[in-house]
Amino acid sequence: MGIRAVAFWPAAASMLALIFNIQNLLDDGIIDTDGIPMKDETIQLSPKMPAMRTKDFFWTQFGDKTTTKTVFHHRQGSTKSVKVAADKIICNTTYDHEPAALDFVPQIIPIGPLLATNSIAWNFWPEDSTCLNWLDLQETNSVIYVAFGSFTVFDHTQLQELALGLELSNRPFLLVIRPDINNGENQSFLKEFEERVKNIGKVVQWAPQQRVLSHPSIACFVSHCGWNSTMEGTTKGVPFLCWPYFADQLFNQTLICDVWKVGLRLDPAGGIITREEIMCKIKNLLQDEGFKVRAMELRNLVINNIKEGGRSSINLNNLVHWIKA
Ligand SMILES: *C1O[C@H](CO)[C@@H](O)[C@H](O)[C@H]1NC(C)=O
Ligand SMILES: *[C@@H]1O[C@H](CO)[C@@H](O)[C@H](O)[C@H]1NC(C)=O
Ligand SMILES: *[C@@H]1O[C@H](CO)[C@@H](O)[C@H](O)[C@H]1NC(C)=O
Ligand SMILES: *[C@@H]1O[C@H](CO)[C@@H](O)[C@H](O)[C@H]1NC(C)=O
Image (cartoon, rainbow, N blue to C red; front, side, top):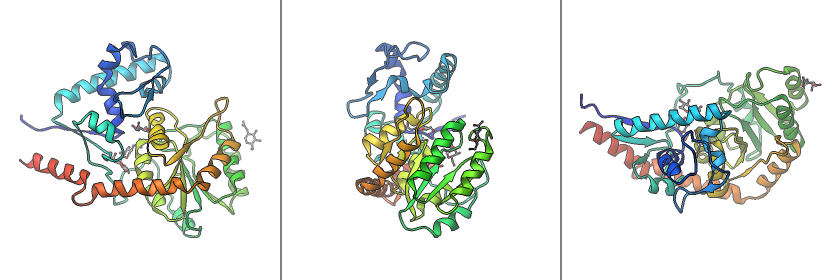
C-alpha cells in the first residue's frame, strides 16, 4: 500500500554490521551454515573495526549448538526480511560510539542516544527510588553502582563473590539484585550481607538507572554491558567495570575497554570472578583518573550528537522529513 517502513535496531550498530556480513563469513569459511565458528580466531569486518573473536559471535552465546543454530537461522531470516521490507534502518547509537562500523555499513542511521525523559518508560521491575535519597548522602564520585540488567542470572557462588568483593573494597556501593537473579536461591545470604554492610552499601531490587547514573556521587558502573546500559553509562560519562554475561555483551566490552578506553574487564578465574579480582579492579579503575577523563570526553561527543545541528539530531530530522514527504 506504499507505506514506508523503518526498522529499528536497539543494539550496537557493530552487531548489525556483523549480521549483514554473514554471507562473507560463510564465503570465507569462518562459520559453517549453522553459524558455528570453524575455529577460534579473531576477525575484523573492516580494517578500522575492532577485532571480534569468532567464539564470541553473539549467536553462539545462548547455550548449546542447537540453540546457536536456532538463533543464527532466526537472525539470518529476519535480516533478509529487513533488507527486503525496510526502507531505512535506524539505530540507538551515535556516530562517535562506532564510527568504523557506521562507515562500513552506511545504511545504518545513528539517531541515539534515545533517552527516555519521563518515568513512563517501560520497566521490568518496579523501581526503588529510595536509592536516590541514599545517593544524596554520599560523597561526590564515591559510589560503585552495580547492576546487571534484565536477564543475567548468577549462581550462588558468583553472587557471594560479588557481594564479598564489594565488602572488601570498603567503598560505598549501590547493588541492584533482581529478585530472580539467582532464581531466588539462598535469600538468607543476601539478608545477612545487607545487614552487615548497611553502613556503606545499599541493596535494591531495581533502580531508576538513568537517574542513578546521572547522580554526582556515582564513581563507576559495574555492568553486564548490554547496549542500553552501555549507552546510558557513556552518555553520563561514567567509567565501567565490565562483566559481560552473554550475547553481544562480549563485544560491547571490547568497545568499552579497547576502543573508547573507558573501562576495565573483570577476568574470571576458573569460571568465576573472584572477590579479590573485584576489589583489585575497582581499585585500579578508580585510581587512574584517565578513565574518568576519557569517559567525560566521550560523553561530550555523545551529547553533541543530540544537540541541535548534531549528527543524530540531523539524522532524526531528515527521517521525519522523509516520512512526511
Ligand atoms: C551489548 O550487549 C547487548 C546485550 O545486552 C547487545 O544488545 C548489544 O548489541 C551489545 N553491544 C555491542 C556493541 O555488541
Ligand atoms: C547460603 O548462605 C549461607 C550464609 O552465607 C551459607 O552458610 C550457606 O552455605 C548457603 N547455602 C547454599 C546452599 O549455598
Ligand atoms: C532497552 O530499553 C528499551 C526502551 O526503554 C526497552 O524497551 C528494552 O527492553 C531495553 N532492553 C533490554 C534488553 O532491557
Ligand atoms: C536507547 O539507549 C538509551 C541509552 O542511551 C536507553 O536508555 C534506551 O532505553 C534505549 N532505547 C531504546 C528504545 O532502545
